[in-house]
Length: 226
Image (cartoon, rainbow, N blue to C red):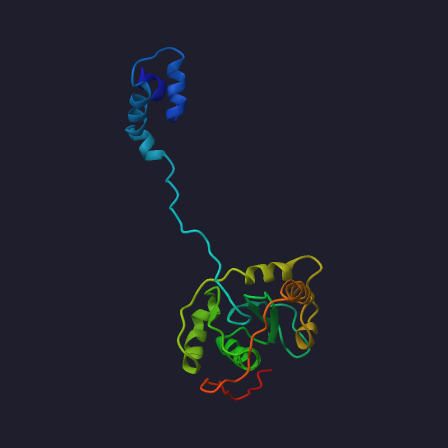
């Protein structure tokens, strides 16, 4: 009976619940559910063609942050329309605590450009972060880690979750900025994002950047990238 209800064309190799429902319409015996379950689980055809169970994955967790600019995320946007200064890429730097975004224009999205922009426009203004996260794209694979490692302490590459939101805002209708915006100000999407981030974190404690005795200070040569 189990073979007829499960293996035959009328059964269609359905699961335990469907097979037991079909059998209950015409028969009953003790331990019926256990017998049907064992029969269905031992069916070679079902074992061969049933979908693979999804792998168990750890739940997604955000990086804990306690102060502004302690953890940042970077990513490149472009290529876009070339500006009058030859810039057609923008490096987005996101503070994970306040969600503040800075867009730094550059003519090329190279590892050298990433290093110089961070050193001259981020680290010298906000200090060294505890971590710099990226999406492990072509830029980080092409030498940014090595170039940064020569100047600063080594770090562990990590995947990030905030910059895709910034890029989606940049691609949203009505948010694309003209090329000259890369030479003077933030694109409208980044400015609007920063406005909301500033309002939501206006009461948060500001980072204390005052020098204390015994602290190490970063001294870097200012280089003109553009």
